[in-house]
Length: 83
Image (cartoon, rainbow, N blue to C red; front, top):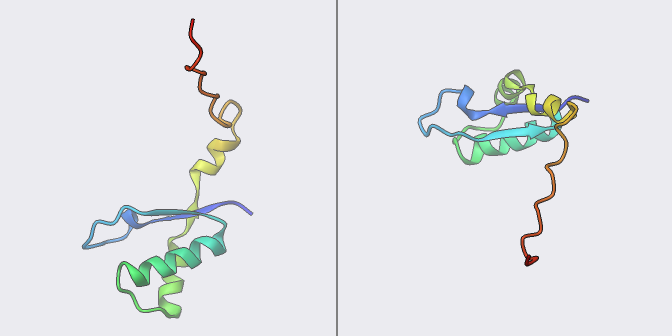
């Protein structure tokens, strides 16, 4: 299943929240619901969850990670060796 994300910057907010949550759709919805309740003061319910589900979008970083040459970063050089 493709990764999804939700970004608080896409929603009107008095606090100018910049949190982005990414992962499997169910994980993102659970975390976003808790965040909306605990940080933004929303009430839990079907309306909140429907709004969050509608705000989900594809995670562009998931595509970038699969592109050739975009894997794990190269290991850092061992700078402890003396020359």
